[in-house]
Each structure stands twice: as structure tokens, then as C-alpha cells.
Amino acid sequence: MSVISEENVRGESVFSDISADNEDLQPTEIESMCMNCYQNGTTRLLLTRIPFFKEIIVSSFSCANCGWANTEIQSAGRIQDRGVCYTLKVQSKHDLNREVVKAECATTRIPELEFEIPPFTQKGSLSTIEGLIDRAVAGLEQDQPVRRATDPEVASKIDEFIEKLRKLKDVEDEFTLVIEDPSGNSFVENPVAPQRDEALTVSRFQRTVQQDMQLGIRADDDLEQEPDSNSVEAMRNEVLVFNTNCPECNAPASTNMKLVQIPHFKEVVIMATICDSCGHRTNEVKSGGATEELGTKITLHITDPSDMTRDVLKSETCAIFIPELEFELGMAAVGGKFTTLEGLLKDIKDLIVSKNPFVTGDSGVTGRMQKLMEFGEKLDKIVAGEMDVHFILDDPAGNSYLQNVYAPDPDPEMTVEKYTRSFQQNEDLGLNDMKTEGYQEEN
Image (cartoon, rainbow, N blue to C red; front, top):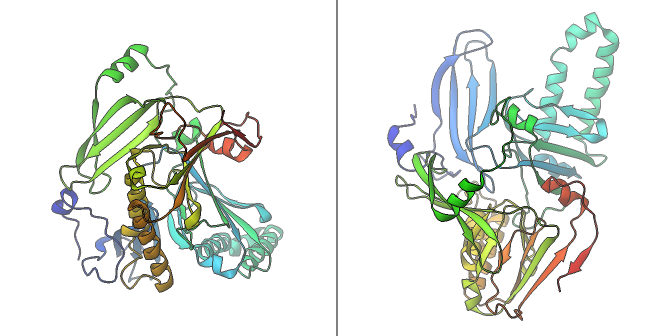
């Protein structure tokens, strides 16, 4: 039996990468009561990482006495700053194989059938699109014998609806799957990563007060309060320190927070966490001001290795594009950061290649592995100044920044465009009352 030891919790991370070469990656077995026959069964827990996503806990219960079994997942990370909504156009049977993490608090919808699975009605699951459909069918079929005896008409209508759900797996017609999760901890696989998935739309949204209460992060009587001007001024003059847990090994750590004024830009909040147990370091940046009236698109033509030293502020609402690599990184993928261009490119490589457990080991798909490794090599060439590319920051909130080394004069290799947000971008930012015009060049 595998045991989660104190040394593991206080030392290196207990969340292991998926790899056939890792012999230590064994589930933890716990004797527990079967809720079907009330005899003792076995629960197996596996703490692992999902590539391009985060850490999760997979639990599987089986009972040798009655044969009952079930599987569920729980997010091992914190509730995210914003909710997430995945909208997938299922166009072929291949799409049914996409991996899906559905948190317990997520709502699942299939608009074409007017079908919805409300939040907190199912346990969290690690499955595929086909698995989600099968689980929905199983849930509807569960009480059908009783309905046929007590209300045959309702049972007949449910049978018809179950047949419609089953036909979805034939994908004779395109249908839409929507997973909306206020905790931000659900996930739908992008099989063409690091390229953009044309069939999958990922949007972020601000939670409502009611959703905060459902997630237990706001008390029922918690009221919004205006910030104290004296406390804000104090924050500008000192580094605030508060206790937290390391996101890598869960050991106690400290987070430092400071308000910083970026020249020729605005005030931002920088938060840095250093773990003494495992050495993990993180930094996160949040805008100290409100959402701007216009979005900002910054395009830098990288022509010299010295460009790598430019300061970059990437907000959590900013997307990144490198057209020459056909690469797009959605908002919040690497969070808010204040670093150099070289540092940001290395963070992207870590996310896509270096820390992706599916690049190595028997679990890797040869074609995808080769594609990701080549992408990593191209990023290295950009950092070394051996590849001519355009680097684009597109922030609908207008809170991102790339240093102009010629300031206050114009930068010949950099353009900054201001544009009016689209309706969808306003939805993502929680701003629904703004105009939806096209791009507007900055004077």
C-alpha cells in the first residue's frame, strides 16, 4: 500500500507527472466502507497532473463483496480568480475522445437538446466527451423501472430523450457541449496544442456573489466595502507579507505583495511566493487600476537578442500570439506576470514542453511529442535571436504593457493599437454595456 508521507508533503510535490517510467507513481489505497452493501471496500487515490492544466486527485472505489464501484476527481488546486466556460463544437467521432475534467460545481449543457446538468448534482469526474454522455444516460436510466410502473407517460418521454443522447455519439449532426465552471477548475483537452483549437472556445468570467457563496468563499452576510484610502497609501510604501501554502508541495510558505508604479504605464500589484521546502517560486501580477475603456494590442517585431531584455507586464486577461509559429496562448494560461520578454518565453516553453508529462514516456503520442519538441526548439531560437518573428500581446482589458526602449520617442519595431472590445470580450470581462466596434489605431 502506498502512503502519503510527511516527508513528501513537506519536501517535493506529492503530485507526480504521468509517466510509464515512474515506478513510484502508485495509488494510495485506503480501506473504506461501501455505501451500497455497507461492507469494507477499497478506495484508491492518485495525485497527478494533467498537461496544460493543473493538479487533480483521482479517487476510485471498488467493493469485492457486492461489486459496486465508482470513480471521481477533485481539484487539488485553489479556486481560481475567475470562472471558466468551455464551448466545444463536436464535429466528428474523434472529438468524443477528448479528455474532460468536470468539477462538481460545473454546469454542463447541450443547447441543441435543451439539456442541462446543474452544478452540485454530480461528483467531479475525469472522463471523455463520450463518457459524459454515457454518464448522463446512466443517470436518466437509473429510475426508469420505477417511472414505468408509476408514470408510464413520463417514462416514455425520458426514453425518447435518452435515445437522442445516445445518437449524439454517432455525430451525424454537429452539436455543442458547454461546461461552465465558476471555480475555474474544469478542463477540456485541446488535441492540437500548442496551436489554437478552432472547435474549442475558452472564456473567463467574473463570478457573481451567489456563485461565491455556493463555492464557500463568501459568507451570506458578507457585504462589499469601500477600500480605506489610508490602507491603500500604506500598501504603496511597504511590502505586505501573508501566510499561504506552496502551490507545488503544499508546504507553508509566505507571499509578498507590493504596489509598484511601472514607468510610462500604471500601477500594478506584484505578488511573489517562495517556498523554503521545495524551492518553488511564483510571481503574479494584477492591475492596480480599473479596466480601460479600450483594449490594447501590442505587436513587437523581434529583430535583435537585446529585445529579450524588454520588460513585459502580461495581465491575466491577455492573450499571446506568435503568427510565424501559428501559436496562440489564451488569457490566464500563464496568469499575470511582470518579467522580461525572455522570461515570458521561457514560461511558455515550460508550460507547453518542459513540464508537459506527455512529451516523454510511454504515454506520449509520437506525432504530438515531435511537434511539441520542435516548438520548444523554435522558442529557443527566438530567445537566441536566430528567428525573425512578431510577438503580440492582445489584452481586451488594456492592462498589459511591453517596454518601449526608445521612450519617450516611438519604437520603430513596436506598434500599439487601441480597439473597442467585442460583445464576447465584454462578457469575458464582466462588462456588458460597452460598444462593439472594430480596431482603432492609437495616435
